[in-house]
Each structure stands twice: as C-alpha cells, then as structure tokens.
Image (cartoon, rainbow, N blue to C red):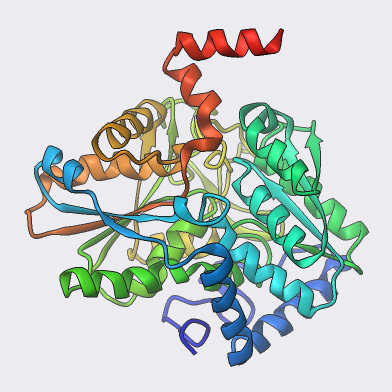
Length: 415
C-alpha cells in the first residue's frame, strides 16, 4: 500500500476532529449516509485492490504522474531560490480536482450509488465530477452560483457536454458557498441513491480526511520526483488555499518533515483591510459551525456568513478546511494572502517567463513565490503547486487586462 496506510500526528481523531475543528454537524437524515461513507473509507484504506484500481486510473485516465518542472527562467529572473512547479494543470480536465473526483467515483460505485451531486465555484471540480460520472455511468447534477456561471462559462459548457445537469444557484451571493448549500439540500432529499461528491478538504467527517487522502498523490509524487532530481527534500512548499484540497495534497506527505516550511496563500482580493472584498479567513475570521463542520469562517457578529471576493472563482469560499485551521494553530503551516493585482502580475510573469498558463487560483501561490524566492539562497528549493491551468479564466483575464481585441471578438460573436 503506497497511499492509504500513511498517517501523521496531525490527523483527525476517531470523531473526525482536528483539535477543536472538523467533526460532523449534519442533519439527522444525512448521518446514515455519512456513516456508510466512513465505513467504506476505512475499508478501502485497508484494501490493496482499491488502491491498485485507483492507481490504474490515475495513470491511464488522469495521466499521472504530473510533471515536476524546474522553472529555470523564473528562478533566474527572481534571483534567489530554485523554483519547481508541480504542474497539475496537465491532468485530464486541467486541474488537481480529478484526483479526488476519481477516488470518490470509485467509492460511489462500491456503494452502488446511481447519481453524483457536486458543487463548484471555478468549475474545475464540476468538470471533473461530470467527467467521472460519464466514465463510470452515473447521472450527475452540479450546483453553481449564478455569478460563477457568468465568470466561468467555458466550464459550464463542458459540464453540459459531458451530460451533467448544471443548476444555477440564485440565493445569497450566488457563489460557491451558496452552491454548497444547494448541493446539501439535494443530498438530503435524494440520499438513498445519490453520493455527494464534495469538492475539497472540508465538510462533515469523513470528507476532509477522505479528499486529503485522494489528493496526497500530489505530495507523494513530488517527494519521489525531487529525490530523483535533487536528491533532497524541498525547503519550502507553497500552494493557494480555499478549502484546501490542492494545498493539503502537496503538504500532507511532508507534515512530519520539520525542515520543510509550508505556506498556504489565501485570496486577498482588493485588500484584507476591506471587509467583504477578500476571502482571507485568517484576516478577521472567527470560529463557527457551517455546512456540517467547525472551522474558521468569515462571518459577522451574529454568525452570518460574510460577503467575500476574489478575482479567482475558486478562492472566494468563506471557510477553510478544518485540518488547515488546526495546522495554523499548532504552527505547522504558515498563511499569507495575495491580492487580485498581485495574482494577475504573477500570472503575467509566469506566462512570459515559462510559457505556462497558471489558473488564477494558482497565480496566488506564485505571487507568494515572487515574494519569497529573492530572499532565499540559491541552494534553497521551493515547490509551488500549479493546481490548474487558465483555460477557464480567459474571460476574467481578458477583462482584467483590458484586452480590446478580445472585447471586439466577443461583441462580434454575440451578434
């Protein structure tokens, strides 16, 4: 067993709590489904046949291992640490999301479910969910906030082509948190034959640990690849953080290597001093219980979820995965933020230096690399997770950069 028998001292207890965070605060109707999911999760962790099947599809369908690429030009330009990029954007469907979607689809098949329910913000999780639904013969419904549908229309198109029913969510801020609420309501109503394919390392137990274990393939590969390339561990790992799936996927296999520094980068939006215009949970967030679990949320004094903002549709969720809240408390992972402008600058620099199109989410992580690398010696190694590629962001980037030719093209097509 390569993956599922791996444990750290930072894992959840038997009730799904990471210190005071996590747990299972779900409606009574969902408890049997969550208990079934936990039983199956425990079972597959001991089943070499399941892991063999998971690895088979990771290799032949997802296209793993994804490359660990030495960003020579960016390294030279910044003039400090050596920068490696784990390019998850080269996975099938263009992001890391396919890793846990594949794992959960195999679990749903094992539980004899007939339908997958998913929520999505940036659309990458929705596309991955629709993809595995098509591959394994599930019906699929994806909930997506109306605002995110406008921002990420290409992914909506592909979800629909894959056979998924995409339902716009009109309530609240019409973004990811509202899509999660809608997906949970659907699951309550259709719990018998449906599996909720939750999209990150959050939600009620066992989802935070379950998705982390499917995503840890990222760090597992990095450890092996860097040993082959450099003969050592990385000195620093950097990844963007919303719920935490791509970051925890990179960090998890290194948590007990105390020499490895880890930085999670939240969405600073228009600045963390501007209420409602960022999504940095550690800049004013407080402890709360929302959507089935306990963690740090951006909320008002009455406990209502606060408005959030990010140029990247995948980073504007108001809560953070419970394991990350715990890792922050114990000092194992550091957190920073990058503004919309910093992310755009990082995007442009990466495109022009390396010919790589990082998703706007991943560009937040690169913004932190730009801050850190020049301060470090040339024998220091940074690994940054490029969690997805920017195909989905073409409308946002073109508008933000004021591309007149693109604007003209869209207006002509709309006629």
